[in-house]
Image 1: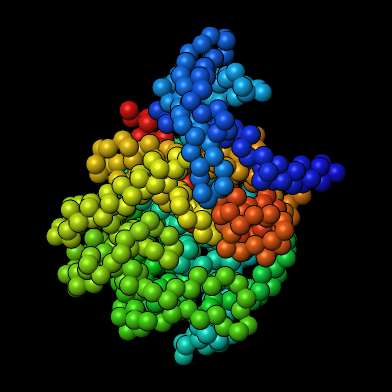
Image 2: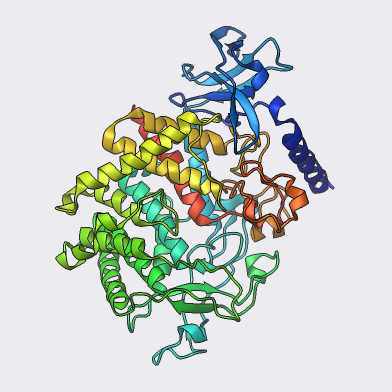
Length: 567
């Protein structure tokens, strides 16, 4: 009964948002960091108006005016901004204006990003395959182990003389990729890389972050322990006979909305591809550089990662353009990519940084690349981030060029943010637009680290506020947070577990008008890309979760937490 009530309420909120957005107030619904840029977006008719902010005692702590009204073409709305950034003390505040029907409450808390970041990171423990999720770590979201993956069948597309069709391999562990129970190398690679990169840049701070996982307290940072869960699974996806890497491990078709333990269908590894194998090589190379500085056991794993990366590279040299083609009997996610020059650039760069072997350098040609924000199809900028994080190993890899490309992208993002009515960097809304926002934030933080220019931090911080509610939908897209929080994620665990609230710390994919047939176009009610979103399970295009969207969210939120903690 309660779930039905929430569902109806959510629909009414969606409808009212579409028709009455101009009367809403949009802001970070959870809490700002003291150092954050703090924007409250208000109806256009409140432009150039005086407002004041009161503290918990009712004392006035800020008197200012809103700015000019500005339209945002992607939402069809027009807003003004109340900037309360100069407030930097912990506490609860109220923004008061003469024409507001009620005051607007907001919170400043220097622990806010730490808490959100821990839940974002904890989502990976909740997504582990092949092991039970225990109550002492997961509370009410504890569940039985699913998918042991101890008898994974070689699909016809992946068969070889030494591993013929219908033979089996052992490939347990790792994380479920998204709202389904597949495990995909392409998406695992950028996800694993992003978490490794966060640890590389902010290791001292991240060693203090306790996410209450089984490995907590073992003298290795929780973020690294969690990343190793997936890294070790990835190693099982390499054919030790030739070095090629299987593209994915899935059932032939998606199962229904059931818990992992109830999905008993046969699991297959499907096809070896050049893209998956290059992504694997890059990720293993990155891991090797980081793990060699850890304990004895992880140093040994580092050596294994280097060998695996080199074997993968050799397979790709012999198979330079094996692109993924979905077999007719397989209906799960494809992660197909027709242009893999960026994968070659990324893998070659990472292998060079790790081994110093000059043979990789001829594949590192900056002029052949068009660099953009990272995403699973666009991975060349990840090479730039690694070059800048490991300048000593970069040697003659044109560090200055890497800096120039990163700051160029960051400057473009800043310009988009500065021109935006909602003070956000995004101007396109593809599938997983919230992931794009967080990847913007990751790139911007890297630009700050190489330049020291705080304008990049300002935009990265705005990315966090956007997904926490400062958007024209007035929706907090991180589960477990905000007054108008996401509730009906397209995620099999969240739908099947019988618990009203979804697993906390999951980032919803966010608005896009690319696929409106999943719930029916009439459900979305608009073609405006920033407004094309519904909080319904059927909306896999706007409300699914995925490990590659959560990873940059972890990076940005805990990265900002690390930076702010040292200021």
